[in-house]
Length: 264
Image (cartoon, rainbow, N blue to C red):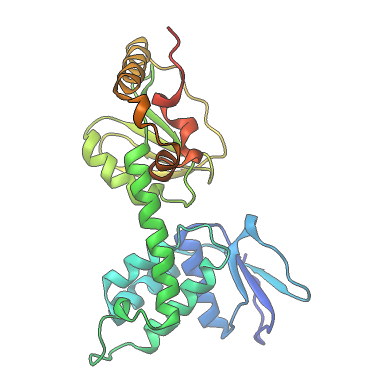
């Protein structure tokens, strides 16, 4: 339950559950209590400051929806899309950046003489949010490129990923469109989040670990064939490890089947 205090606190941190809705609930609370929190972070990432109070914010979907509608009404849907993307970043300052941006958007509400808010790159409030948004977009693109599915014996396609930002929500539509009616799970082991698609719609499930069945024999054969094809295309004389690490970050290698040694 959210702690209620009549007098605004001067040195306070808001702790939320790490979701977009949790972050927006914290933004709503800052308006309600007329407070300027020093930190807005997921509870598991909180680093206490000396003399700082903390408030655990209960995720409230109605309040989060009100914040979203307020931003969209004030400055448009594209601005909220930027907030949604930025919120996936693991930066400790993400919550403060989002709050500052939303405050600026609401103060700017109804002003038609200005350019679109996302174009105001000279404004540090906007620039900070766009920086986080760009990071999330880049990480989403890496996920689209480097997700590798295995076909499990229960008929589900499964992929394990470890992105630098919690971008599974941003890529689920992409994979749902491409796999069509095939059920799949993308498990983000770095953030304890799974995107689960049943062939019709998808949802997000919190899980620190997953227990999955073995891959089918056909899938194991296809993985071996893919690894051999990958190796056959390589040209030793043109091997450039630095360029490879640039386009294919080392942190992603453990989930790339083509980089595992062939078993046969």
